[in-house]
Image (cartoon, rainbow, N blue to C red; front, side, top):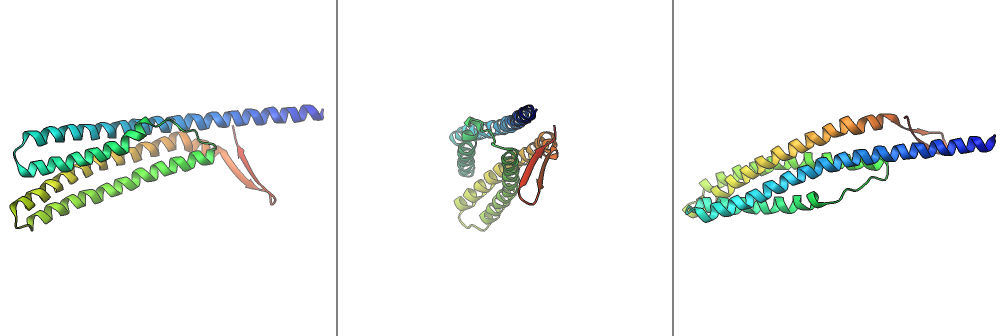
Amino acid sequence: MKHIAILLCLLSATAAFAQNDTLIKNFDNKRYQLNKKGMIVLSSWGGATIAGSAAGYALTNSYEEKQFYLMNGAWGLINLGIALPGALARPKSSSSIHDMQKTQTRMEKIFLANAMLDVAYIAGGVALKQYSYNQSEVKAQQRFNGFGNAVIIQGAGLLVFDSFMTFLNNRNRKRNLDPILQKASISFTGNYFRLGYRF
């Protein structure tokens, strides 16, 4: 009888770990697919910015517009350099529910911090435009005005992207991770911690 009880405990523990592993893999896959699509969008934005800036630079004779396209193209290269590795990265599976929650929280914080940084970029673009008005040399005015316009446009585009990714990651967590976490429990018996999960 004792052996049957031990066998039943082992079988139920194995089933619980298998269920737990499936929940982690399912959520990790949803998070990976969501963020991969985001990186594809950002890579496309970067690539389109580079191509559009190269064409614009070649077709215009205006010094100010050339400066705009130079700065715009530089931002496109940076965006592409940041997003392309993320779009090509392979999915990584979390080792535990705690690890899965940490990764999700980190992703949300990164996109939210980037959105706040984008506001600073826009403000920097406005400052460059204001700075251009104080220049006595015409080419310096045009250069800083062109740079300012490019920074404002890129900052605004990134603000939309990062805000949207923050919202989508937050919604994914609320729909797919929070219900899992509500079923998890931690208790302390005085000698050890016990982790549990209700199925």
